[in-house]
Length: 220
Image 1 (cartoon, helix red, strand yellow):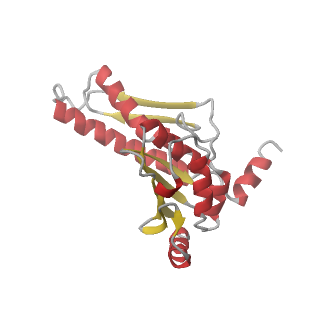
Image 2: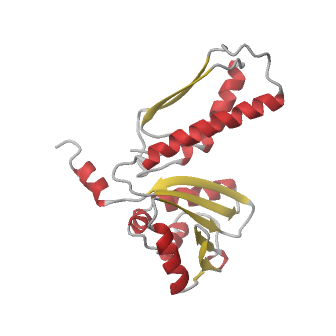
């Protein structure tokens, strides 16, 4: 049950900085949307999701300038990114961490919908487990995501290996190179829709035999 909003977890972050509560909340919401709300292990949501950030002011700094606040916000987001990534890496039965990026979407909503649909597809996730660059499964997930897209506009990479161009596979050699990349514990999948200027991402993992075993025996 690890899927936004946030994940099955309680997160507590402490800082000595002195910062106005309103601005602290602003930084928290900004960071959560880009980190904890961009992870998924299995697509199921939990009733027990919380992120707290507590600032005690012990640093004794004065009011934060706009530049100081931007730096603090970025630093807080970095911490949250590390913590949220650890959740995915430690997902039930997970053996691989995948950073999935959608580029060139027509709208922000399309970018996120595409990322979520691909990341949560059982067929895609089992292909990840098998180190299989089955781009047809990615295309199928995109096609049912409800986004604006043209098959001939889609390009797909595994790390730096382009396996799909203009909606068509590039052949056995690129797929073999991509499969080799997918045997590692971490890799990226990038999809360019060529429909606009918006992008989004999800950090996810593979779906394994162990995940089924853990959850089949959850109460027994």
